[in-house]
Amino acid sequence: MKMSKQNAYDMLIGVGILGTGGGGDPVGFGKPMVDWDYQRDRVYELTEPKDVKDDAFIVCGGYMGSVNAFTSIGDMLEQWETRYELHEAMKISERIAGKKVNHLVPFELGGTNTTVMLSLAARTGITTVDGDGLGRAAPESQMISFVGYDIELCPMPVVSKGGSIVIVEKATSPALADEIGRFAVVNDGGAGANNHYHQSGAQLKKSVIPNSISKSIELGEAVRDANESGKSPIDVFLDIMGGQKLAMGTIEEVKGEDRAGHWHVTATIKPEDIKGKLKLTIKNEYMMATCDGKPVVMFPDLICLHHPENGHGVMSSALKEGMKVVITAVPAHERLRYAGSTKIGKKAFSPERYGHPELEYKPMEEIIGNLH
Image 1 (cartoon, helix red, strand yellow):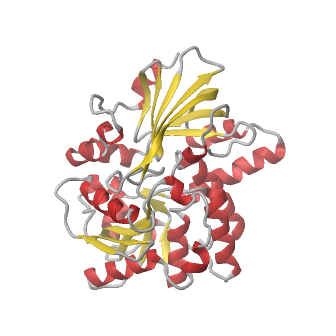
Image 2 (cartoon, rainbow, N blue to C red):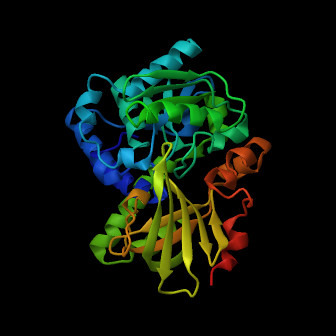
């Protein structure tokens, strides 16, 4: 599938919601990049997972850094014409593997991290897999479906915005590679690109979250149509994604800081339509929602925040006291849930990674009854 410019715009609406507060700003970052690429006759092209050859060589990747590094594209587009860190990371992956990359697969859904991989594929004459590793966004490299299917995160080349190159050949714990890479990019420009999860087509077909980019296009188109026809974009989103509305409310407090390459925040929300007080735990993405202190949705299940007037997604970096939001929840894809249930996945996805070592993941269907 060759994506039209309108397809790309619709995708940005979709990933802006499904990115769960992270993955990069579709308005300040994704749209300018789409416009830039299509003005230069770069066309984003998708290959269905089932059409990928078993012996194909695929790498995963994206940009890493705090959400605050990806709210605006600034002068990056011009710089990327001469030095695209993501391309440099891909060339290092090819050198390590001793073969050419046939397809790229985005790490996650998001205004930055889906678009930059589509752009890289267009620049290098290959295609992007219609899928990703999450069906949402996540703050750390080990939080992905691939870990549950014996696909190694390392080797992981990291190329910082400042020009440093770090290759994490091996890490002794699931989160360590991400921590090493994040230290490098935070201290050399605030952002950087990485490659990881080298895999064959046969491995990809078993583990990827399939057709998530085309699903984002479908979702964005439906939300756009709903806004044009006067329908509820929130209802349309819930119908397509099989989700559930948690509440509509006003943000009372946003408390936290940008620390070690992550946006660590809690947001307290006063709901209009339920009795309890909602609190969101944020590590770049919306990781957990609680009602009066009890979890109602936990990573990897999706917590989505929408602007009430148009149903579009709200970036975690944009949260402000007094802002009205609609909060919805969607069960994670079965492959992502399976990955989180494996021995390595339990460590990789642990609530300890977002500040709650006392908790363990429960599917939203089991705990959403805590909402009242």
